[in-house]
Image 1 (cartoon, helix red, strand yellow):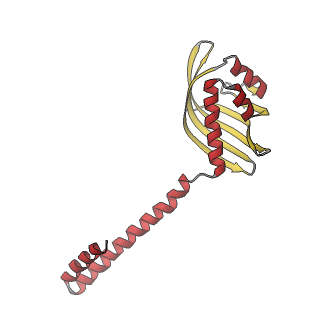
Image 2: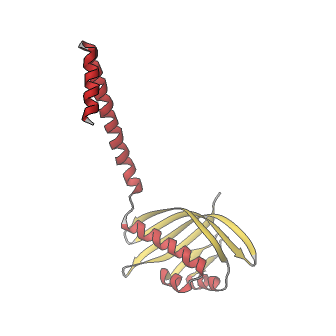
Image 3: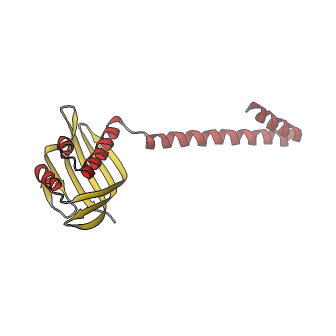
Length: 173
């Protein structure tokens, strides 16, 4: 690295006089600007990639929830959902936890595939809100349907464990 600087310095000095000094100043400014731009890029992009422990936990739980829906794993879903949770479906139906689990048990709907496109978490003390987007392929009464959805999942930490207390889904454009 220093050899490159020496070559540039020698080239600038070869110009001699004021031209050589301006060349040195110009080269120094270029290196300082590159360093500033690199530092700024690191400072402004690092927070965008950083996730808190809570963010990671909630995103992982939401992904597990999807896996359990696809597998029809009611025991794991019941452990995740708070017994008083409310689910608001894209068609406007509001279901208690018990009603939601009964629908899953009876295959209303049957989840064929779920492709999560993005998830964002905001933490408010012992409550975390996940906002996500995804493509949900389901079958209802033998009819295949695909929904582009935006959804909100609200989790609350109870006795050291995150519980899903509310979920609402809407179709996205």
